Image 1 (spheres, one colour):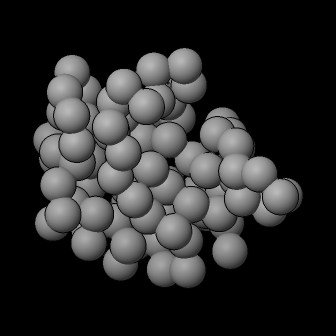
Image 2 (tube, rainbow, N blue to C red):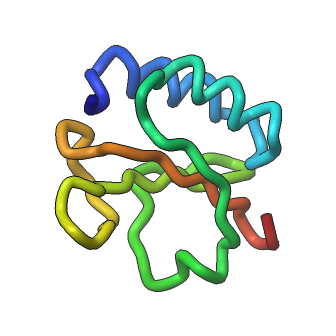
Length: 90
């Protein structure tokens, strides 16, 4: 499964003022069933470019179609989502 434009819009709305906490992850899992959703430390993602940056967290799209996972900017290739808090640890 990949992210459809409508799902991206729903995720955007859900993350506007949200943090990368367990409640937010549960909400995102409901919006993107079939995709892996995880939280990670902002320091672990410091070399990556977020797909979206919100007030309290950043959204990364993960492409796990090949042997190694990689961060992507293409929702059509996303097989997972990673959220990282802005300016702190998960």
